[in-house]
Amino acid sequence: MYEVLAEVVRNGFVESRHYGSVVGIAPDGSVGYARGEVDETVLPRSTTKPFQAVACLAAGAPLSGERLAIAAGSHTGEDFHVKAVEAILADAGLGVDALRCPPDWPEDAPTRTALIRAGESESRVRMNCSGKHAAMLAASAANGRPTGNYLDPGHPVQREVARIMAEAAGEEPSPVAVDGCGAPLFGLTLTGLARAMVTLVRADGPYRAVADAMRAHPEYVGGTGHANTEFMRLLPGCVAKGGAEGVLVAATAEGAAVAVKVIDGSPRATTAIALRALAALGADTAGAAPLGAVPVLGGGRPVGEIRTTPEGHL
Image (tube, rainbow, N blue to C red; front, side, top):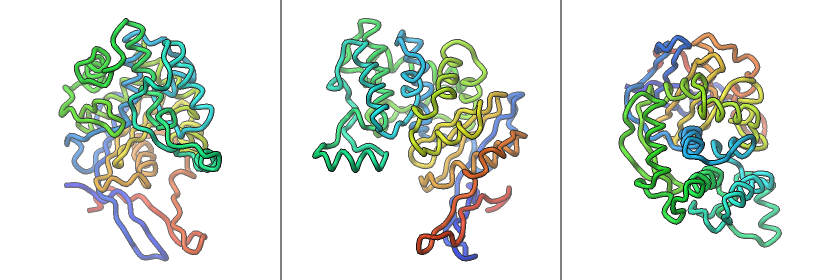
């Protein structure tokens, strides 16, 4: 049974409720926090990007620093993001026309407004997944693999992604779906997804490289003012990555990890829910307190809040 993980309170009245599941893995590897259907399979959406980046590294993509961070991120389409994606492609001998993610407007509002005023249109490179796609293309090019079909589930890069997902989570990914950007998407249980995050921050090699890049360059994982970026900026050493349809993962440097799935697909409370779960595992989340207080506005001023609920709240 799903639990009420958060409530939307307006002027003291509970206006909406977000049901879902959240699981926390303690640094010793045990399940230290569980609410809802934590063994149910979810489609992790963009929370898999760090592991796709690990797979690209393992497959030979020459990525580091900001370029590795954007490969693991869902960027907001700002100009500095575009430069990083273009640089990954250029080093692989490719242009932005090699990208197979759909054209989109940047999530960053000032950038989007500037592009519209300049008469620009949607583009693949501004789409939030273009860093991941560029990394997949770089991994393909590094091994002399074809780049035109890099999104095919049978492509060597995608087979490596599936292998890394299984290795990190300790379970076989299933089902195989298609993500919003067109890339193969591998299902995991929510507990498996949290265990994968433990692997990301505790394992060596490409796992450690990706985690370190995300920590060092959080602005490439999200963007200006993005919740994932602010999470990592306010809690140094932590790694956080959200995904569509109300999924979010986070882990501390010590190896405490959480995975959240809000069943209605809304992301507005996922960060606060994850912070509550990390605190329950003993992590110090005080630095990110502003992210745990989500205001509800009326007439442009706060009249309530989105608040997380205590355990056992059904």
